[in-house]
Length: 420
Ligand code: FES
Ligand SMILES: [Fe+2]
Image (tube, rainbow, N blue to C red; front, side, top):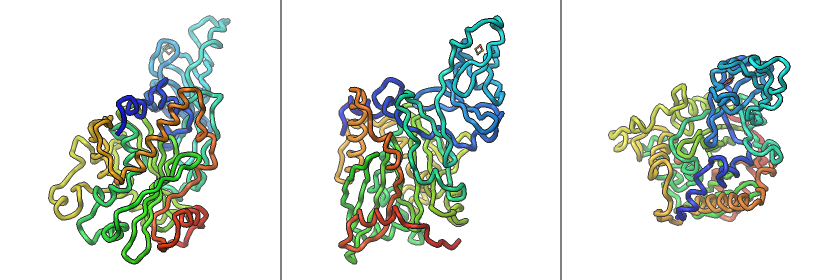
């Protein structure tokens, strides 16, 4: 459990809050590249860490990310004209460049130097892995872009989605790290199930957990003893500020997830399934079906199965198909995260068990780093760009093989031959 004060610290990410300032030391996913399909198209609204922004793409593909209110009299630049080299406010025609500089003030006297003194708030962006990333922190602390393996791979190696989720970002982070819930929340009752680890979970002992800190976060290591003397391992890297790589199916395939605060009661959930090889048609079909870690969404990224329709829960399916009566792994996660004591979980009344070790460790790491930053100690994680290159691991190992042997092996493994 957390004190009221620590829970506030963990969950509040607006500008000026300790956790908000910590988030503003990292590159974070802002929107999908596909939301800005071509130069000259209208701007789109983007809210991050409580800040209302707009994004637009100019000629040549360059992306601007500006505070949405025009510096003049605060009309929303969302209505602006995208003129390829900048965005012009439709109210009085002031025009702003990618860096926020005012390029034109047509209603002011032609000899006025006023425009040189007015600047829109603008943030740096970086496009990689089908995502537009943003850095909302102080320019002097802007780190190199993290070396996430999948952001360097060709498009056909990735499947990228985002969803709107109605809860605080940390409820999602905890869910990603909580390997113990997999055999309950995601349990299939129908033994023709296709969910691979279920058989392992049916036969294995309860997991034992180990935490190993890394230069950018930690590894949550779950070990389950199998009846044949082997172990089933699940190793989930957590990278600050809110990224996890969830162990997916075998076959050298991984799922990256990011929980990005829109404000303190809602978030964007980015999910990327990737492999160091092209994804097969079968794998893409699974991802597109909404049955695994990606949900089907409306055009505004609201999940089709959501709180307003009880996530399409079916009582018959609850008796015969699966534990929840909700179809799809990610759709099963949503009710327990969005309806976990409300959109901001009050953690002071919890009763944590032995399976919550990874969650406790992640909270401590985030709180410790945010408190240090509030005292002026800069975090080291954002600048350890190379350490972001981490794959997860899920699979069996012989009884006498340690987790780090398996983990190191998967980091360097080349792409296996996969038949479609
Ligand atoms: S409010 Fe934008 S130009 Fe006046
Ligand atoms: Fe889950």
